[in-house]
Image 1 (cartoon, rainbow, N blue to C red):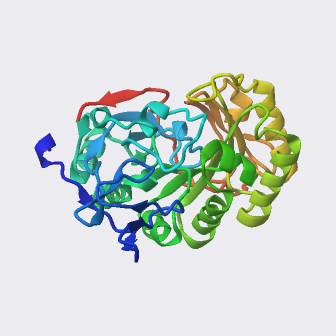
Image 2 (cartoon, helix red, strand yellow):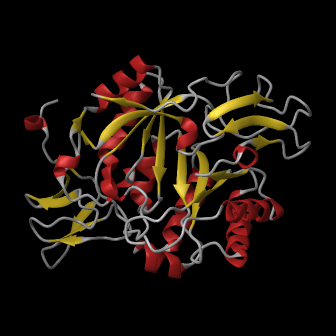
Length: 359
């Protein structure tokens, strides 16, 4: 695919307003655009009296990662995943950890080019079991992600969405209909946090989580980045984990990950490892069965344990797997308790490798 072949791709979610503007209906922002204007996400724009996706077929880069890096701990453990993203984002997180891509307003960030069919072909050639739409948020490049997922499914390759879940109900149905697994960010559990630090709202994210869990077959895991002094209080964590248990169930894996100073919040200190350990303990006390710590070296908090007998089921040292305590049907080999997830008889052996790919 040459740069000359890249053309704006017609968007699927928009309608005309009485005042002559066009409203983008992809996400709850409902950006209202005049001709030539871009939406807040940067990649959707009004051109020729319609909403188009300006980054279809263009990426900020491709890389083969361990699936645990997404993070997904109960989805094909140990296997490689071909990962890519584009530019832009429909949230405005002041602490964005991938701001060089998600906040990019420069098309030259999108140096890599590949059609959906090419991505599926390369994933198959590399032995990747899945393709992940990540780095920035795949919601904003829905048409590209969905077409890629279709091409991947034709080759028996799974699709993984790493997303903040900030998407409108109609688009939500199409997007997740083509995904096999998703890690959705639950960034905090107050409207104030979402409004002040992300520029969004909490309720649409809760609705996405509930939809994915109850209305689809997508394997779901959740990530919360803990920021000291902002979303790490015992009270907020208790309310959040109670909601997960009561609304989504105790078997949804939850990842607490460590913040590092970045973007517009460089004055906030990194998350102490003890905060992650405290949050994990609290969440398990609330009834969650699978709670993990991330972005820190914590083998105990990164490993999977049987909620019934306490046996070590999947040992993890960063992204390297050790002991494997599941039988060939995904049950605890010691007590027979079924462990929810997408498991095979044996784990993959990709390890912690990171392999950049030139398409």
